[in-house]
Image (cartoon, rainbow, N blue to C red):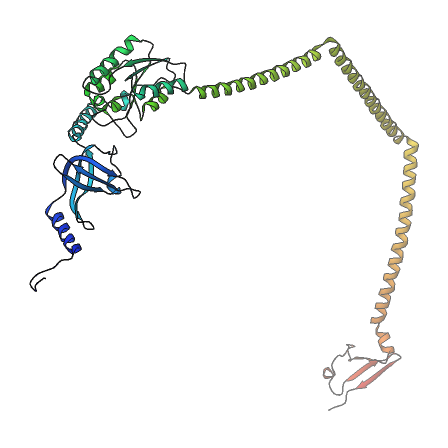
Length: 445
C-alpha cells in the first residue's frame, strides 16, 4: 500500500516522461543495421526493425521522409538511417523515428562520385559544345552491354521493332565488378575498328544499386566515351539513375530501351512518310497531267488560229469590214458634198437682184407702215398732252377765278395787293371783277 510520501505515476505519464528523457538526452544520430519485418501500410508510412547480431530496434519512417528514398528498401538490406531516438507511448517501446535512409557503405561512394563529377565538369568533359550529333539513320549500331542481362534483349527488341534495317554489332562486356570498367574502355576503343560501318554505339545496362553501377562512374570510362571515334548514347539503370558515363555521353537515355529508341528512326514513321510522299507524288502527277492537257488544249487553239484556212477566213472577214467602212465613207462624202451644194445654191438664190429688190420693197412697206403707225400714235399723244395743258391752263386762268365771285385788288400803281396793311387809309384801291371794275377808298381807322 502506497504511503503519503510516495509519488505514483500513471503508465501513460511515465511513458511520456521516458520519451522526453530519451529525446532530450539523445540528439539526431546515424544508425546502421539490417532491415527486417518491413511493413508498408496504406498510410504510406514505413515500419521496420533495424538489427545487427547483438540487438534490434523498432523504427518508423513517415511518408514525408520516405518519399525520396531510392532505391526502395527490402528485408535484408543493410542500410544507414539518420534518426531521432524516442519512445512510442502507446506501447512503451523504444523506437527510432527515421529522417533519412541510404544503403550502408554508400556514403564514401557518393562522395567519390560527386568529386569526380565536379572535376570532369570543370575540365569541360561534359560541355554541350563537344557533344557529337547523333546520325538520324545509322546503317550499323554498336551495342556494348552484358550478353546475359535483360538490357540486351530490350535493346535488340526495340531496334528490331523500330528499324530492322539497321545492323547491330554486339560486343558483350561485364557491366559489374572490378573487371567491368577496363572491359568497357577496351570495347569503346576496338568496336569502331572491328566494325568500321558502325556509326553509333549504345552503352547500356539495367538498374542496380550505386555499387552495381559503379563501373560506369569510373574516370577511364568517361574519357573513353569522349575519345571514341563515333557518337555514344548511354542508357544505364533506371530514369532516376545518373552516372558519370551519362554526363560524358553524347546523348543520355533514361533506360536501355529508350537508348534504342533514340538511336533508331521509327520505321512506322517512315511508312507514314512514304505514304504521304506517295500521295503527294500522285497529286503532282495529276497536276502535271492537268497542266499538260491544258498546254495541249492551248497548242491546239494556237494551231487552229495559225491554220491557213483560218487565216483566209480572218482576211475575208477583214475585207468585208473594210468594204463596209469604204461604203460608209463614200456615203458620208456624198452627203457632205450634197449638203455643201445645197448651201451654195441657197447662197446663190439669196444673192439674186430681184430677190433683194423684193426684200427691199417689203422692208420699205414695213417701215412705211411703222412710220404711219408711229405718226398716228405721236399725234394722238400730242393731242392728249395739249388737252391736258389746256385744262391746266384753264385751271390757272384768273378770269375763271373771277367768274367764281373772286376779285383782284390793285393799288394806284396797278400792283396786286396781297395784304390789307399794305394800303394806307384814304388810298384808292381798284377791284377787278368778272364784269367791270370798282374803285374803293380805304377808310381811316
